Amino acid sequence: MMGKYRHVLRLAAAVLAAGLTMPAFAQATPAPALNAGDTAWMIVASAFVLMMTIPGVALFYGGMVRAKNLLSVMMQCLALTALVTVLWMAYGYSLAFSTEGMHAGVTNWHSFLGAFDRVMLAGLTPNTLYQTVPESVFVMFQLTFAIITPALIIGAYAERMKFSAMLWFSGLWLTFVYLPIAHMVWSGPGSLLGDLGVLDFAGGTVVHINAGIAGLVACLVIGKRRGWPHTHMPPHNLGYTVIGTALLWLGWFGFNAGSAVAANGNAGMAMLVTQIATAAAVIGWVAVEWFVHKRASVLGAASGAVAGLVAVTPAAGTAGPAGALIIGFAAGAVCFFTATRLKHKLGYDDTLDVFGVHAIAGIIGALLTGVFAAPKLGGFDSAVTSPLLQLWIQAKGVGFTIVWSGALSWVILKLVDVTLGLRIEPEQEQVGLDIAEHEERAYNLS
Image (cartoon, rainbow, N blue to C red; front, side):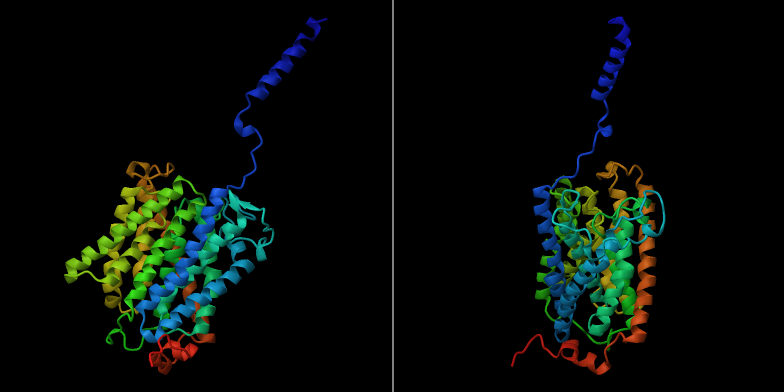
């Protein structure tokens, strides 16, 4: 009788043995779980990045304009914070990060722009997660990036754009320029530039090249300030600019280290390389300035710091300390010339050097990310086996961003110009935007 069922027992034993030795990937994948440490860090990082716009950019830019335009710059930063927050909640997050209809390796409409399934933050609850943090925290973190990007463009057209035109331009630019680029880079498998292999850890293309190119187009379309370059227009309060620089430097740790979306080694390394690159850029800018002008300026050191912060942004998750040092020094040295010489040579009035610092340092950082992400050059991206190949991929990402931002920014600016008009009247520009637009003064000394 036992022999009759022996083959049945053997089959059962084989099935049991196979079950015990099944590979891990065949077992049920555990659901992502909330991590309290990651959540706490991302809440702090979000606050840091918000601080970069108000008061960071507001003070950094505000100190560099003339006293009669200080409040206008600060008001623009404050108003953009409110406007972008509402637009982000209404549809911005959905268009940037919805993965509806996306498939890895497949290029379709959703490779360029997200769907509308998350409009008004549909489906968001206290319990929904993004990786190991509440999705609400991720929504807030990415919102702060969406706020600061159009705020950076303010520096290119400062002292001469209408407040109403600024609001319309910024809202349209966010919708048709920022949101698609953010989606194409960061939304995951199926995104256009993500599938191409473009590396952008925290916003070299999405934020800085994007904003810097828009700034160049804006200052070309709106025209020069009255009297520039023959009238001397020095910064009215470099103390504000230094304070703004310090707040940007501090906030950038949230910007870069927060992009790890975790409190882990990647965040720690991103923080370290951010510090190294920024310090190197200050030294690079000041060294060149000292060689050319035989002095070191406060404005130059502050500008160099921002150049370094910008350049290391795309590389913060993949470059090692040595790579960050080279990226920062190169950005500081090159941006000295693009911010102080290039605009005068070519004749465009980029008021606060948005193109000369953000676009140029962003391009330098994005390209060198492809080089210094390679493990053979001290980087941490094992997928980068050929620095030259990754450099070519980075170049394609940079070129695409330049064309996208440049073309659409021009269309939006022209549309606003023919409807509302971009520029204030000559008499208003003479008296200053604080009085002309807001009927207030930054300083009442009487």
